[in-house]
Amino acid sequence: MTKLIVCLTGMPGAGKSTIAEGLESKGYKIINMGNAVREEAKKRNLELTRSNLGKLMLELREQNGPGAIAELVKPQIESSSANVILLDGVRSNDEIKVLRKYGTVKLLAIHASTDTRFDFLQRRGRSDDPQTKEHFEERDNRELGVGISNSIALSDYAISNIGLTKDELIKNAYEIIQSWIE
Image 1 (cartoon, one colour):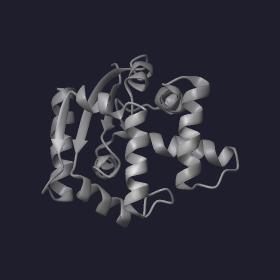
Image 2 (spheres, rainbow, N blue to C red):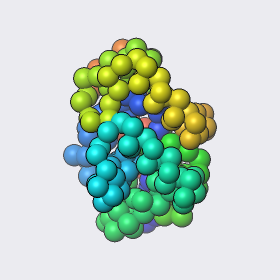
Image 3 (cartoon, rainbow, N blue to C red):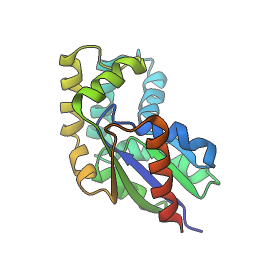
Image 4 (cartoon, rainbow, N blue to C red):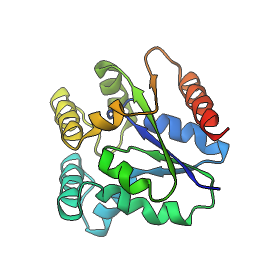
């Protein structure tokens, strides 16, 4: 069976990681694109700051092409025995092109309002999460600059994460992914 690669896309804080964490128990392999960049930063002895990770993401794309982050997760995809792989944090159509070499790709976009996303990111507490509106807007602009709006616009399905509970968000995503499998 060809692997189903479900790419979760959406602006930072929309709910992609919440879905991934919630669906891990369903037997899906979860791969986080941001973690791939964080691992690369560790290899280079870079501190995991917002600034360093943002620069590294852009540098990797500059050096290795716009699909560079997808190339970083290729070994995890190839070595996984799971039939469904959930990729958390796809940001561009170039990454999607790379991923199509390894299975059937479906895009699931998650939308949330700016205020909802900012609030969530402030509470999440990753080392690179923005703590000010200025840093938040900076990050949004960087994401838009690498083409995330295209992957959102071309998604196979979109979930509006406005007014949903965590459980409702995860349940909606699960039902959509199951419909792609059947």
